[in-house]
Image (cartoon, rainbow, N blue to C red; front, side, top):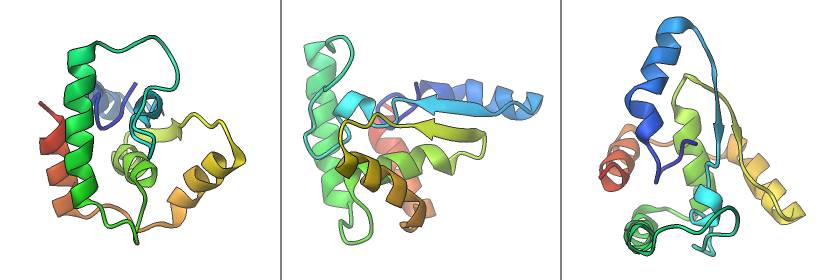
Length: 126
């Protein structure tokens, strides 16, 4: 699992995979639905209430940083994961055709800037 809310993989796994020449398949890039407009856990086991409260507060701060005209929250989350060159592919969950279309159009939205990446890493790394 690798996403804005769960960046632990970036600390060790991504650099190790780079050294070994191994690609990464990133799963759960939308944090089981938290990094969508619904901001609710839609799949998997329940999340600790305190962790959920902190995640939602951070996501609200993220919403202030977003330029919705350039990319949506889910597109930003997927772009964050794909920014890491060690990530070969990302597997977002899709429940509807609309979700699928939004996920696919992530390939055509502008990449995150260096400043955006720094803000996202700081905001969610704690």
